[in-house]
Length: 463
View (spheres, rainbow, N blue to C red):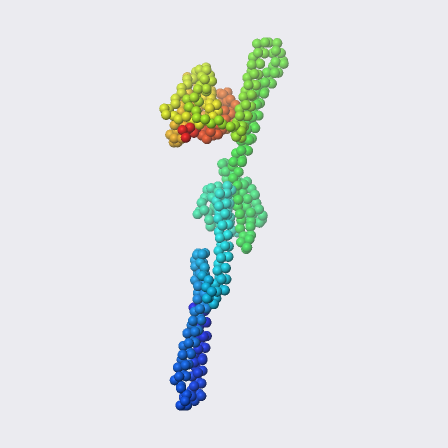
């Protein structure tokens, strides 16, 4: 472009110089100056030649002076197009086109600011999509996937490389999602529907059409409602279990009262027996209410733990004192083993003693006469900063289907129910929340008729 500009400026000046020289030559030849002895033709021709050269040189200099700023602007424009946003033309007051240079620099600066703003907005948008808990997927009007965020990839079990550019139906692979997108396309209205992709995944899907600047497409939002459904199920089970647990002692109390009213008061031994039964039922309900209150306080964070370094052996003392006589009556032997070099733990002594008491009480309750229960503790093999506790019994064991639910509130296995050893069903839930409040973990391993091992960890106090 600058070469063409140079030619357009230089050639007219050069032609003008040639025309002037030709005019001088014609004047000399036609005026008869050559025949006039007094006329110096060589001097005139020399003057014409010098004028031609001077005019050509001047035109070349002017052309270069005018074209050089344009060449610099063109070079800077090419650098900007190649990605060098900092490319500018140095201003020079000697330029005949200094106004052009200044205008170009201003334009480049404004363009740089607009591009920087767009880049910042794009980064914010990408960061939001990257960290959104909800899945986002965008398709064009034909259904080809244009964008998908990590949450959507996780929910749909795909990757950006597998999804981008492919049809929506091939990416989601579920007829309900495909029908929802097709319905939105047909009606051009937002569609909302809860879609169950499996027993462990419930999604609320929102498909919204959009059209902007001649571009049409659809935004698909995936909201994971699995946890919400789980909480609703737990709430429903909690209310059902609570009503069931209260119904049994209340029915028993009602039967006792009716029996006493029907004449059992006249029989002192029978009346005393019924009153003891009523007392036991009241004690069971009192214990249930107390445990529910404690569990609620722990879950809501209202219980403040008094964390101090505690020797591991000391945590076993109180549970053993409380339950040694019960184990003896059940015909079950107890043993304690603390590995050498076990560091103290950072714990609320009373709370952890309650956890061990609950675990030991369950072990005694579900171990047949002649069985054995071992309480042990030692450094966690996988983490030197933790201490591992274990309560192992040789009892009736827990079915594999029940292992994942034993720490739920009010949950009781069928074997516990049939043996009449269910308890309130809150002890293990309290143990789980207490251990987790200390920053530890709790889990169980068990086999039917082989026994169970309950494990939990606590942070070591050595730090």
